[in-house]
Length: 384
Ligand code: SF4
Ligand code: SF4
Image (cartoon, rainbow, N blue to C red):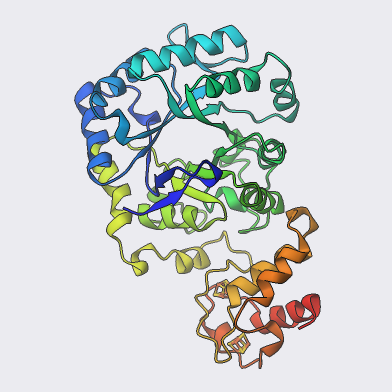
């Protein structure tokens, strides 16, 4: 297993974790076995948002005697009413369900307390008022019942607004190539509706890229939900000519800036094993570049994926990194300090201006990016 820092929290998280959503109706033995598989493979990060007493009790029983081997992400604002999942912003009810989670898990803390499912900017602003959810989350943290505060959201502009407050340590966000090809203001429901789904090309949504950049700047770790795009990517999507393996999906998520871990939802031991296959997969098995290049997500926007499949360069240019720095310099909304970007650029072994336009990189790029043109642009932006 590989581990990454969970942003500024400093916690070490396994790059493959588990979202428990699909185990909500599973029996005790299945919950136990799936969690055991994760733990035995060195996995240490789980997300449990559901308010259902059954799944909370089963996870609690499965973790008896080994709670300390896992980092638990619980949610404030997810409740269970009338025998079904619900979302609440009512402070007393939210407290009841956090206390209930701790009791059923037989622990006195969660590692990350996520403010659950905020996709509306006005709602986010309201949650910051005294006595509202952010206040309550901080009280849990200050009392030692939560080590860090997180947010789960599906809307880039809302998530970014929250991250820019500096109050969010961890962001749970859908990271996959299908969602990355959709404009950020689209309603989450529209993503799953073939009538309204419309891909604009990978990286077309600058808001999404700006969110990833903001997370990196603030030290806010991203944990990926919907890593398989709710199964679309694994089952194959004939409209998009796209089919990926679990290892490729996980690698895609882990390659986005700021992402610390992918938390695929697994229903069975077999599905957990498929996700964990990432750990033992070869770089070739994880490589998704050609799959995306062959899909209809790629719309020839000349957008570099920073994957460096085009190397080696005869004059030693780090093409992916130079292009990433140039894109950030040209996009003020990325929020990066231009001086810091220039310092990073200066530390590279070769500059864009060293490009001799030999074109060998372009023959290797699966996305058809005009690299020598990009190097010319970068040299003009930076001045060398
Ligand atoms: S130019 Fe192509 S191969 Fe090179 S980093 Fe960009 S997308 Fe990858
Ligand atoms: S075209 Fe420029 S960046 Fe590409 S391999 Fe040749 S020298 Fe390197």
